[in-house]
Length: 120
Image 1 (cartoon, rainbow, N blue to C red):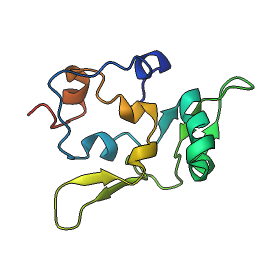
Image 2: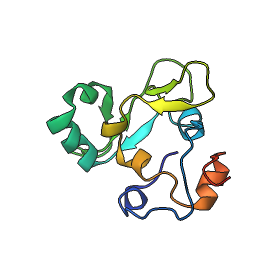
Image 3: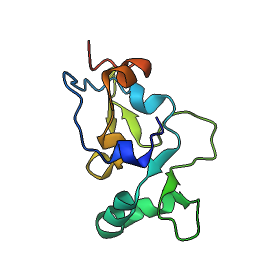
Image 4: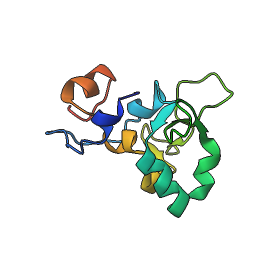
């Protein structure tokens, strides 16, 4: 689910998409998410506890990072949690989730490629 910064910050909503909490966007390929400068600044002000999960990389002084790099070998996001007794999931940091998550999916093709059920 890695996207470039330009795609993540366009703010365009995908028509005909309705999240049904299937969790597929977070269960596969979301162990390392890209944080943009706005995410870091927001967390510094509103959720500083999340900064411990950010590893800065790239050019010196760069403020983007790989988010939530875990030591476990798992493709899933560390913040996704399954509702007990249901095949539905929720995000434990939904109000503070990064831009890459807020912008998902960037297109119908992207959603279908990742197995998203939001177009069914």
